[in-house]
Length: 88
Image (cartoon, rainbow, N blue to C red; front, side, top):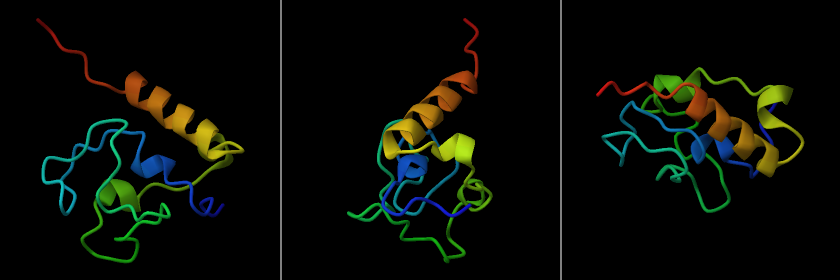
């Protein structure tokens, strides 16, 4: 499956803990990646500087849904489900 052109949900919704050029500490959930263009295209798509976590992501119908809103909801839920538990 190919990515939905102009979606960008995978570059906005989830947190990314690995360094990204321009975001050395990664990015929190819901924050737009600095490497996402105004039309929601990855500026590092073919670059070796693209983080491995991004390169390994493969679009799927479950992940992408039928709209950007569905994709955002999926990624935000996934982020919450995989968030490390903080022990106090």
